[in-house]
Amino acid sequence: MATNHTNEIHLIFGNGPVSKAVVSELLRQGKQVRVVNRSGKATVPAGVRVLKGDATDPASTREVCQGASVVYQCAQPSYTQWPQLYPAYQAGIIEGAAAANAKLVVAENLYMYGPVSGPIHEDLPFAATTRKGIVRAKMAQALMEAHKAGKVRATAGRASDFFGPEAGEQGSFGDRIIPPMLAGKKVSGLGNIDLPHTYSYVEDFGKGLAILGTHDEAFGQAWHISHAPTTTTRDMLTMFFQQAGLTPKIGATPDIMIKMLGLFVPVIREVGEMLYEFNKPFVVDNSRFDRAFGNIATPHEEAIRRTLAWYRRQTQTANAKLA
Image 1 (cartoon, rainbow, N blue to C red):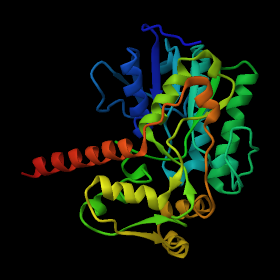
Image 2 (image 1 turned 180 degrees about the vertical axis):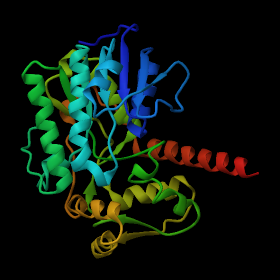
Image 3 (image 1 turned 45 degrees about the horizontal axis):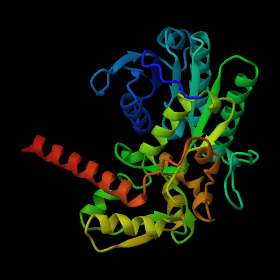
Image 4 (image 1 turned 30 degrees about the vertical axis):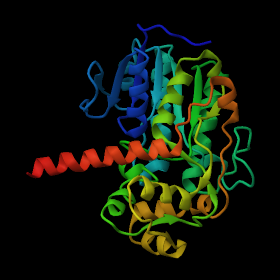
């Protein structure tokens, strides 16, 4: 059952690409929106309040969550600090949502499943073998345990590797791919770029999280948010070149190069442990979400067009500042 009360306060932790996509969708629905980050400062759309809060501090989260109807956990520490900080983020936000008697929606990825043969669906066991995957599995279990214990009404929306406006360095097709491509250079995907790999569009991910937050039947389980039909990394890169009006120049980054660079660059070392996702078919099943709420996926061509348009606007803005 959807809840459509416009006087509800929807509170989002984090101000990254997923948070921004959630904010946009909630505003489109006419909701009151607040964003929480560590500084209390952020560039946000008109009408959105920005609050200062520390996700790892339950006293802080209880304060900023006061009056909220739905809380969205879209904040995350840097990729290199997941084991040390991420569980504390979630624990603090659970405390804040519980104190406010608010519903809690958590943005998750697919790391908790570990290497999978066949389609990735929500009923798979957690079999993570990587540091970040084990962290994700423990956090996902803790969230549902809090729900089952009656501490907080919780749900999770999961997405695959995402791309889109605002994604920047976090995007699968982001800072590492699009600026070099637009400059006429060759770009390279990870792993075997000719295997099927599901990619999520960040605006669809944000919309899906907002849908979960406004439908009571979503709570108590995790959902794989809608995505466009799975294709290969090579096909995705080819579509980017085509939409940009450029001749494709596509390669693949050898695993050994990632592992060697990871010896010296911590964030690349973190990427390296997830390469298993790109060396076997990685196909996500989102049929449960689609049956319950409808398929909300943006076609890849349209998602790519919007992503390129955002990057071009960023370039124009940067050039205007230099002029």
